[in-house]
Image 1: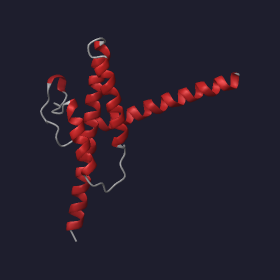
Image 2 (image 1 turned 90 degrees about the vertical axis):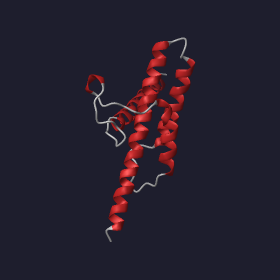
Image 3 (image 1 turned 45 degrees about the horizontal axis):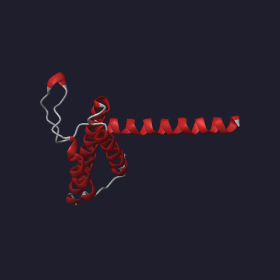
Image 4 (image 1 turned 180 degrees about the vertical axis):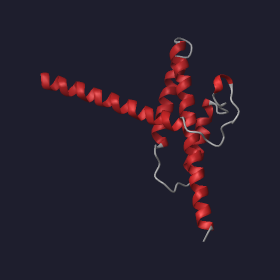
Length: 136
């Protein structure tokens, strides 16, 4: 009985660790600068973010049609699943639990920013490949 309990708790801990590690990857990618970002600072010294959380679907469609020439650091399909799950949670808690709805809005913005950075990385990779190919 005790070994089964230890195995179950270990599985739960490993799953939780994996989710935290994956979310840290999203945060680190979203923290990178991208070409659409305004250079002027808004309030608090942070750069202004022209993205809106509803831009995620457009960015993911652009990401899907852009060619890739290098191995992606994070797959957008997992971010899409996370975005949709958070969107459902935010819609369910929108009127009843405002703190969870606010958290969901922040997470949606994070996913949108991550998608924008991934699209910009693909664009830069394509441009670099084009420059290299045109130099021959």
